[in-house]
Image (cartoon, rainbow, N blue to C red):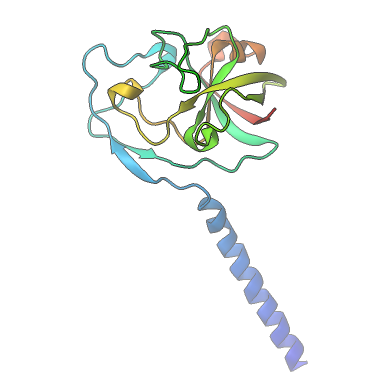
Length: 189
């Protein structure tokens, strides 16, 4: 009986240990890798098309070199971006050094999901608002830098962003008045 009580106690302690450590393991899958200090952009240098934010002087923004793990149903936040010349996306797309029409379903992925260009010009499926759309990855939504001229004086991207053209939002059937941010799922096509 004493042996059985000890075994139960060991199992209980092990269970409690696992229950306490598992959430911290999950939380460690992608932590900020540092911060970047915001600076006020020069006049006219931060394009606020699509309600884009501009960096605020002295504000510390987290940066990430990673994104949450990719699965067949990866949770993300869909945001709105212009991939056209003069749009809030900044320069040409990283994958092909080209600008893309906002009427074409294209996206930029957070740094970790962009994965050193490994998804360049590949398609992903985006699921949201009860619909789905296939979009081509053409750019990185940089989670490692921001608040400078290369990034249109915008803060670094969070690590869970699918930054999409207007065509993606239209294909998902989202009313234009609701464009901006939306919870979605995505997968490699």
